Image 1 (cartoon, rainbow, N blue to C red):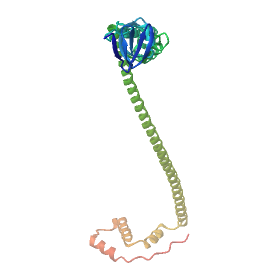
Image 2: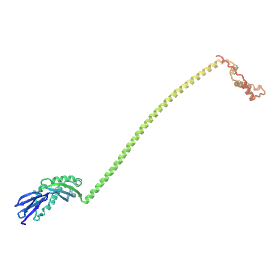
Image 3: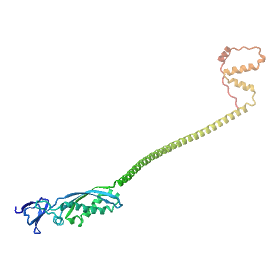
Image 4: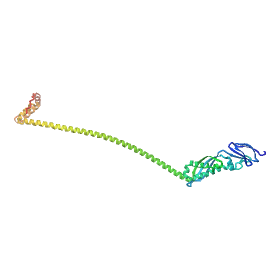
Amino acid sequence: MFGIKYFKAAPNTYALVYKNGRVGREGTGLSFFYNTAWSSIVAVPLESVDTPFMFSEVSKDFQDVTVQGQVTVRVTDPKLLAGLMNFALDAKGRYASDAPFKLPQRVVNAVQVRLRSVLQMMTLRELLRSSDVIVERVSAALREPDALPSLGLDLVSLSILAIKPNPETARALEAQVREELLKEADDATYARRNSAIEQERAIRENELATERVVLEKRQQIDDQAMGGRIALEERNKALTALKSENARTEAEAKAFALAELMKSVAGVDARVLQALTIGQADPNTLIAAAFQGLAENADRIGELNISPDLLQELSRRAPPQKARPTPER
């Protein structure tokens, strides 16, 4: 009625009331009555806006790459943004143009421009491995005065969700990476084998060292035993030599005594010596001498019978002979 309307802004909406081309009121969460005949309302939302993006670019080594991510911004200077884009409301409280809906695209364009400059400075392998570096560089570029701040916006966050090469390149990279992984697995296998060989060699060396020590100990024991046997043989040799010397000396003494005895009886009649010997003999020796005499005179004896009983009786009854002194020399 009469063009009077009531407006109530949300707490996160910055409202500006223009009258005759000048700002009459401005602020967040305003509520007021206004006349549509001479008042214009501009409403700029202040909440953060998440905008996904995905576009294709070329890396430093001329490889096509697709980048997918999301950027989050918020309005920090609503008056500046309202001066650049049309956020005016119509009589029904709706945006009078589609400019507010084009803001996310302007943000994506700013991201793409900064991201392109970063991607063209890195090879495909570097891009696939350095998403954090890309985010850091692009975020710094978006915060420069000629980027988002020139629109009255501030960067809240930037995330790179995926960086993908084209399918052919991806398959080639996968094959190469697969080969590298297989080579690393082979290297690990060879390393384990070499380690096992080194350990086996160390164990064998320890065993050989132990065997060498044992052999040295045995050699020392054998040398000591050989030395003991040599010493024993030396003592046996000395004992044998001493025994031989003693035996030779004893034989020489006996030979000397026999020679002296032979000298002393050299002139004595053999019958006298025999008689002297018989006198000292035992009964059996006397009987043997008697039989010897009979044998010597066998031609004079006609017949002689001697029975075993007679011999036994003679040996039993033969009187013992007294020992006679040996003739002096």
